Image (tube, rainbow, N blue to C red):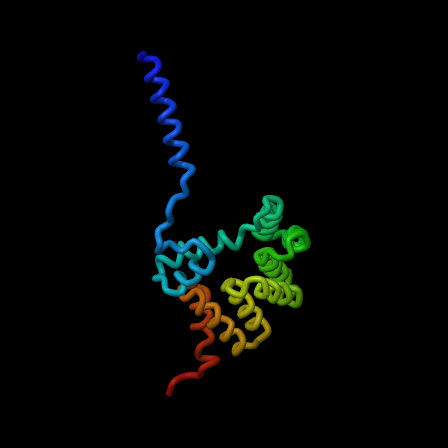
Length: 189
């Protein structure tokens, strides 16, 4: 009889665990779980909260949904970090060829083109990125940097303002706006 009860306890415990892990957990109402929620929270966040929201958005945008495409992205980014720009462009071109709807692939290839001094292709890839994901504040910031490269501070400043409207606590955006403010707006008398 004791053996029957010990087996019964194991079965009840296993069943309880199965039920516990198969029931979806209720997300807290204040936790943004989708892109729109993350972006809305980012626009209202304090600087500390913005860091985590930025990471969440980058993780969301950085996942293609395909392990093979994610591997091409990783290889391209790794090659760019190692200074192997040509190799990065090759990996990222394969990515954009096979996953043309994946905005991050276009953004990363734009970075590689910019590093290689290929500004025309970099701008074209940034335009494609923003067509696919108009809220990618890093791509908007990069477009502002391109305008600065072309000695167009007015358009650069406007791009940085657009990026800051999405991510108010992005340090590079704030720094760029501070740098260009007197050039674009002039000095107060």
